[in-house]
Image (cartoon, rainbow, N blue to C red; front, side, top):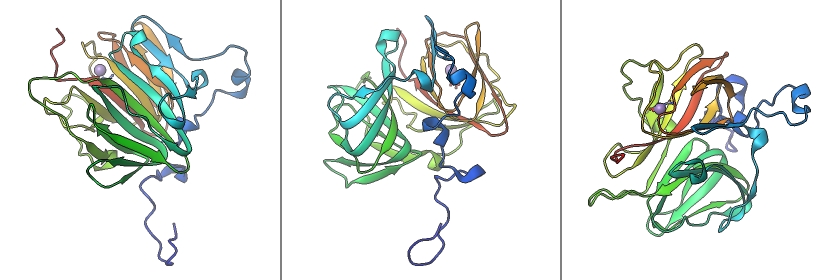
Length: 281
Ligand SMILES: NC(=O)N[C@@H](O)C(=O)O
Ligand SMILES: [Mn+2]
């Protein structure tokens, strides 16, 4: 891309290599089903069961987010499903701004499209663009402001105190997080939050090349909120096997058998909420 001083700047990190569409572009512009299925009355891939849910883009229902300005929200996962967290898309329009979460609620925002500016009482404003994120501790004053438009995926939950540990403001971007060891697994793993005991959840970013799959057919006490950011594959949840693609959201209750295999020509990348560091009792 050309900057106005005539020098060619390196393509921004938000441009993925293939077909130079913005990274994560399929989350907000998903490949819809073939037109004959789109028009099929009542057709959806969404499913809601006792221990899992698949929420696909055609099922999203937006309404104004209370306490936010000029922002539509689609709640995807809420405690009504049995989760201890909420996961929602926030579609911020021009001149929009966030509201604060309720008291004692921590928040993580991840930018899927567009850009927002994060301000808080102490540090200066910081611009969050696609693939950037911010963790806001409970009762931490902040504002996310958007001039044009932005789509965020937001996780919120009641902070589970452990002794005198406290969390702090975290701002980062996926591409700056190091790859972590994944013994016995082939996927590439990044974590967006520190692994220290103060943090009662983490966000995993997991990359699979086509044909790669989870080695462990997992059944564990943790619960998950998943957003498929790139790619496609098959997700096993309980006794069901679902074709999934970028833009799909999955709720996994504790102990639901879960497994993923990446298919297609491009890598799969998913973002995964996982509760950690707390005794399940
Ligand atoms: N479903 C899934 O990917 N789970 C694992 O990544 C995990 O860490 O629980
Ligand atoms: Mn898991």
